Length: 377
Image (cartoon, rainbow, N blue to C red):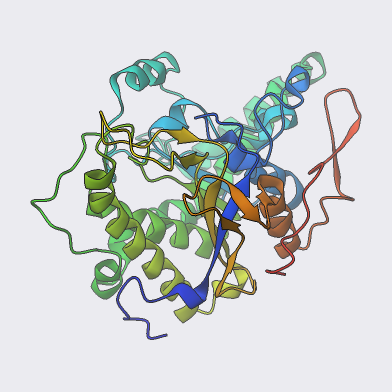
């Protein structure tokens, strides 16, 4: 495929799953981050997100970039979808503040929830004015002396988190690689244009919807992966169409289509596509029938879709089928954990053998049911 081919002409680079089942029906999107419903192992802190697992298994506090970056906005940020759970705060995702780069209007209730979380849900990447690298190093050494006196007293994991975060902050702040990756102005104009869809300025736009600039979120993701980030989570808003489904989709879907095409062809042109696995999905499907009163589609956990690409997978195929109303699976059901088993397979990790110790010291397998999707591997 030509790198400049128009969006909508790249299905042979994608795998379409039409039969995703087992949704918990929850709006926190945690199942899309972990493969598990939020209540699983809740008494131990819950299951960790995929990115947190990758941080544990493949990351190091000495890395110049964090292994797991969450640039999700809006509802997923409020509901804290990408959480480390029983792994502890050391393996939280790194959350740079991208609010000035990409607008995302929250529903009024969500604004209240986000405000209640305080201001520490994002991470600043710049040194304070007047604080040089040398002074930062001196302060770190001084802090290490004090922390050594209390480390054994802290069984909550918070001190370990500070140690790990401190080491990683030093690497990030002094290398500049991560902050540089977040600066889209460093991209050539032709690449920025590639991620800029043409849109109809007269089209209906719901107040929570993002504009065409949201396509550049995937450019940001590519830049982060390029400097060494191992897992990036991204969100696009306005799929929760309880009203005006068709007008809202006419505004949003061309942006998503263009963004996905741009990312896949960009990764391919850079020789990165086989090394990067892409998953596009949501928490659940939408009702097969339109609500006659609102023109909307509501939550439908019975079946949902997913799109996969890259990672050396056998793409260019459709997996599974539903009935004529897209309301029930009639062949080849695929579970959320099957998708994660496929991602682990692509990373060379066997989730049936690899374990993580929970807070009680018991080994927990990465997954408890999933198998790699045989059609893809």
